[in-house]
Image (cartoon, rainbow, N blue to C red; front, side, top):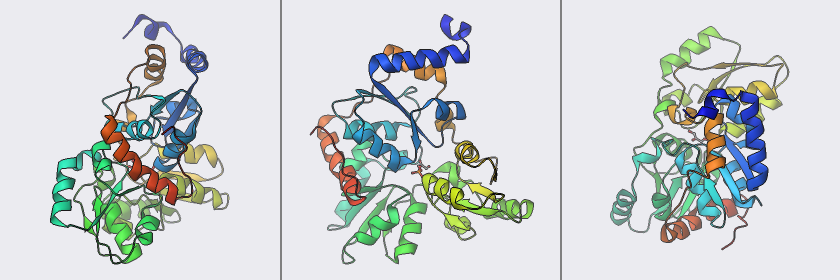
Length: 319
Ligand code: 13P
């Protein structure tokens, strides 16, 4: 721990971040699962789709990405002229690690002619092997829009793929990956939460297991849950079946409603690695720059842009 880390108050750190941000012409963006203090200091918070749109369109020269590695990579893929910083480079994603580019190439060989739809929770190299990306916010619509005669390989999240297949009645080749945090929400935990809060609306992320999703009242991405909760009347009670970080935003936006996390195990350790000190150090030392090899970036960008074009928000990038 540096000398300044020991002596500076939280307020002084925030002030230093503000000053550095202006000097660097930087923007701080944070995923909905980040710790509360990071969400509060960020210029924008959002789900994976929101954040990739912001990364594509910002006029800032530096993007400080408070999230995990694949999110920083997506920003770097879309914004080659900008510097993307990931304050803690070790913040990865176990789900993304479930598929390698080599494995996707093998799968394509096995199923020639199949279209590869890849969840953004994947490495840049995997995106480079894909035809189109999706997020949890648009997976169903993207699958629905694909020519029904084309076979689809959906990677790397089995649960999201299963959910999209069910909603679209498509028979897809599903990868066998999952988010270990969402996978922890068992049907038993769902039933216990229901018993504890019988009047609550149960919201769940589509990364939860199919058996758990069967028991949900509402299924959506983190931003979809934020919108849905806002639409419900004051006094409504919710059980939230996703990473605990989302509860900060839900409570902030809806002080007159009650939110319970579905299980105390819904904590992604990777999403909890960044502190305000790390954000400050990242801006001060311009560390840790996310870079994607150019040949991979160009191919991955085509898959991410195919998604952004589809969702009516074409990326405005330099190349
Ligand atoms: P959202 O796109 O809903 O924010 O989800 C991202 C994610 O990483 C879920 O684990």
